[in-house]
Length: 313
Image 1: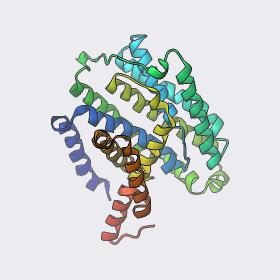
Image 2 (image 1 turned 135 degrees about the vertical axis):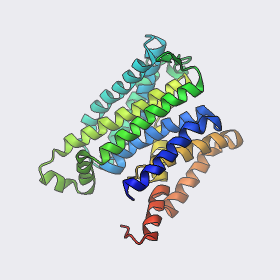
Image 3 (image 1 turned 90 degrees about the horizontal axis):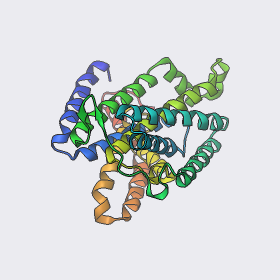
C-alpha cells in the first residue's frame, strides 16, 4: 500500500480524533491513547527487535511516579514534569537493558520480569510513592496559559504528544536503524557476522521503548491525577503483551487497535461483570490466538494482500 493511498486515510483518522471529544468521554479517549502509546513502545521491542519483555510496567510506573511527585511535591511546570518522567524511564531502561540484554530468549524475559518486580517492591516501600495509597491529587497545571484541568483541553495535549510518539516509532522502524533491528530479529548471528554491534542496537531499542513507555505513564498520571502500584504491577506488563498480540505483532497500527479494544472492553464490562472481566479477556485472547494468529490488523493486511493478488508469507 503506497504512501499516496495512506495519506488520505491518515488525514481522515486525524479529523476523527480531533472531533472525538464531542461524542466520546475525553478521559476514556485519553486512557486509550496512553495505552496505545505504551503498546506501540512494547511492539517496537517485540515486533521489530524480537525481544520479549515481561517487565515493561516498570517504565510506565516509574515515569508515572516521577511525574506525579514532580508536579505535586516539587511543583514543577506540567511540561517539565512530563519530560522528567520520560527521562527517568529512559534512564531506568538503560540500567535494566544493560543487565538484561546479556541474556537471550526466555532468560531475557525472566530477567526483565525479575527487575520489574524489584522496582515494584521499591515503589511499595518508598515514602515518595505513597506506598499502597499511591500519589493522590496530582495537579494538572497549565501549558502556554491553557488550563489543563479541563478534560477537553488536556485531551488535545495528550493527542499531540501521542501522535508525536507514533511518528517517532514509525520513523524509527522505517529508518536504517529500524532495518538493522529487523535483521537482528530475523537472524541475529548473521547480523553479528555482518559487523553490527548487536548488543548496542538492542540496548538502544530497549532504551527508546522504555522512554516512550515512560511518556505513556507520565500522561496517564496527568489524565487521572493520581498513580498507584497497579501501574508498576506485573499484571500491567501482561496487559500490554495481550494488547500487542491481539492487535498484531510487528504491525504499525496493531498495538493501537489492541489497546483500544482492551481498554474499551474493560471500561464497558467492569461495572457489569466485575472481576469476571479478566476471564472474558482470557477467552478473547485464546480466540484471537487460535483464529487470528497474526492479530486483527495482521489478518486484515493479509486479507487485503490476497484480494489484490499479492503473495503473503
